[in-house]
Length: 433
Image (cartoon, rainbow, N blue to C red; front, side, top):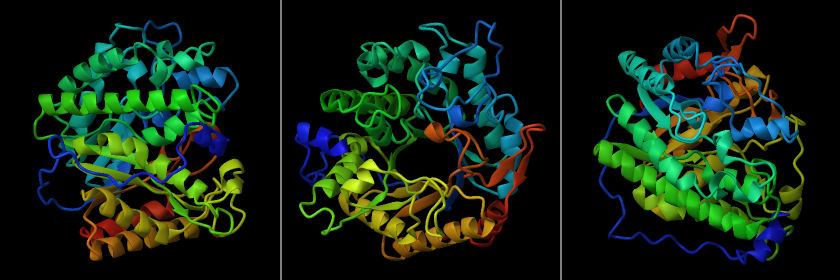
C-alpha cells in the first residue's frame, strides 16, 4: 500500500540533505541544565471525560467517532482518570523522582463545539502545570497529541476532516492563542505536535487512523503542508507569549535497516526516510530541541510494509510485535545529529510487555546506547520513558502494557512496576547519564 502511494506521489528518492535557512533557523544556544529525566502521558490515552453525556461540556474527539464507526476499539469515558484525579499521576511522578512531566491538552475538552470555550477546563490545565511546578517538576505541554474535536471530523467526508478540514488552521490559531496565554505563567517548554509524521502516514496513506484515507498521496501532501504550517503558527504564538520558551519537535523515528536482499533498489528505505524527515524538514528551523520517539528497528522490505505480527513471539519482540534493537537508538541519535545539528531529547522510549525482566533490560540497554551516543558527541538533553501508567493504546485498544505503573480499574490506584522501581533508583543514582 505505502509503496503504491509513494510511487504515485513520486517520492521514491531519498530526502535531500537538510539545508538550514539562515534567515529563520533557531540557532540560539540552549543553556546547559541538569539532564532531564522525565515521563510522558497523552490526554486521550489517560484522561477520563469528566462530564456526563447530558452535560453541555461533554465532548467527543475524532477518535471517539472513529471507534463508533467500528474502525478502532472504543476507549470509553474513563481511561485512567488522569483528568479528575490528576493528583494520582502527580504522586506517581514524584515517586519516580523525575524532573520533567510531559502531558497533553485535549482540544475537544476546551472547545467542545466551535467557538464554545470551557474556561474551567482551560484553567484546569494551567492548574495541573502549576501543581507540577510546586512539586519541583517542570511541565512539558503537548498542544496536539493525535486527536481533533469531533466538529473537525466527518465520517462521510473524510477528505475534508482533521488536517484536511477547511477551517482547521483558523480554529487551531485561536485555540493555541487562548491556551498558551493561560499556560504561559507556568509552562516554558512546549511541543506543538506529537509525531505528526506518523499520524499523517497512518491517516492519509495506510487508512488505519482518522480520517481513515487509504492511498491518498495528494491529500497526504496537502495535509502535511497544513500540519507543518500549524506547527509553525503554534511556535510563533508561543514565542510571542513567552520569548524564553523552548520548542520541541517530537517525531516517530524508528530505525530502518537497509536490506540489499529484500530492498535492492532502496525504494523501501527511501520511503521510511521520507516518513521520518519530510515533515520535520519543514519545521525544524523553529525548534530548539528535536524529540526522538524510538521504540523499534525494522528491515527495509516489502513484507515489513504490509504485514505486522502482534505479540511477543520471542524475547526479541514486544507485545506490539516490534523488534527490540537498542543499538538502533544510538544510530538514530547519530543520524539526527548529522542531519540537523541541534540538541536532542529522547522524548519517548518504552516497551509493551508483562515481563518485568524484559522491561528492565529494555530500559537499561537503551539508556546505555543513549549514553554511548552522548560519549560520541551527540547533544542529548533528556530521556522520557513511555509511559507513566498502563493505558489505552490507539488501534490496539487496551492491549500493550507500557506503564511504569500498573492500573487498578476498581480503585484507580497506580502500582509501581519493577521497571518503575529500577528507573527511579537509576535516575537518583545517576542524575547525569
